[in-house]
Length: 409
Image 1: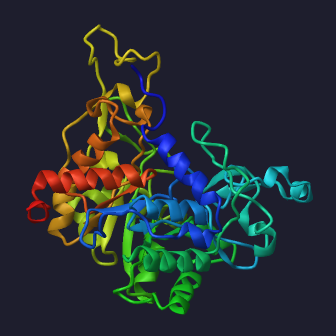
Image 2: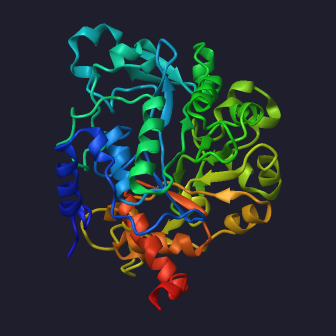
Image 3: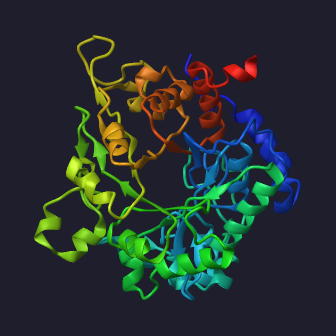
């Protein structure tokens, strides 16, 4: 029988309900996390616990940590007055209730994001004080909507304070993994993210190599700039537009290359795609300014549309009436993890999600199987919308590998 939704959703929703009964400070109470994991594979809370709560809210980050995340991930955009806030995109239309605020109706407009027009409301048109009047909403229709309008939009300073409080309450280190969103776009607005981010880390005492911080970006020039500004760990994100039927990657703009390459107009950069960063030469290039790569997971193991049920038609292979990732079969893993490791680079793929429609046929509808597969391929950590599944799978992985043998004795 087709399982609908996430297997532990009722339990987690109950946990969320309990959390909502208290203030955010109480949300940071001790979690039932078996142990911290300083060496990896790290569980990286993608936009917090975004499978359960609206993205990039203090409650979402706190829940991710309670469910086992080692790091929480704030995507950073800038407000009109230069404050860094946690939003997935500069366009805040789909992640906040801004559309319902009549006082901001006239601010709706069209902006170019990485060369493509987007219509909506943009963080850079609002002061932080105005942003604080908005509330977060769940952008994905197939995920819980009952928490829409409950939570405000946090600043980077608030996220750092929360991470420190969670670390004290849980007696383990909870780090942050900020992403600089669309750096070229922000630079052109006069709202460059890099120095603002480093200054905030400085104020928090986290602008040092040993700080529990990774900074990530899909662009390259700003990572090179950050490499000159800070000693915290840097990660080059590697994207693509889609996966073709045969498992190869599609590089349609704006997901074809780092946008700073496109904006440069330089022929040698325009001739490249993100895939060039996964070649040996590309990895050699990355290691000169970064500590790791964050590839979209098909770069490590893709999937292809094939006739799994051998009925002569490629499509709904699991016969659930829909055609999606669950009807695709895994291809052979690539050598990207091994080649990155040979150059001293960490590998943190994204994004792992627990809904059946987002799991390849090989995983049998069980997200734990996907995590075990990627842990077995040697990744150093991974971004998950469901930290509980990633954490549980890591425990199973350690048990399978004999890592807890002494504890059992």
